[in-house]
Image (cartoon, rainbow, N blue to C red; front, side):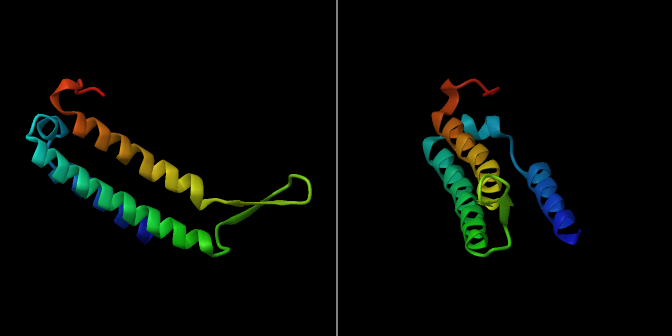
Length: 102
C-alpha cells in the first residue's frame, strides 16, 4: 500500500509543480530536446526495472493453453508505462507545428 501511495504522491507532485507542456512545445529546440532527454531517462529507468523483474519468476503467469504457457506479466505493464511517454517525446520534438491537443 505504501508503494502505491508514494507513487501516486510522486505523480501528483510532478504534475502540479511541472510546467505546461504547451509552453515546452513552443520553446526552443534545445529546451525541447532537454525535456525529451529527461523523459527518455524515465523510460530507461522503467524499462530497466521491469526487465530485471522479468528475469525472476515472480511475474510468471501460467496460462491454460495446451500444456501451460508461461506469460511474463511485466512485459505489458512495461509497455503501458513507457509507450505514452515515448509518444509524448515525439509530440514535444515536433514543436509548435503540432496542435496542443495531440
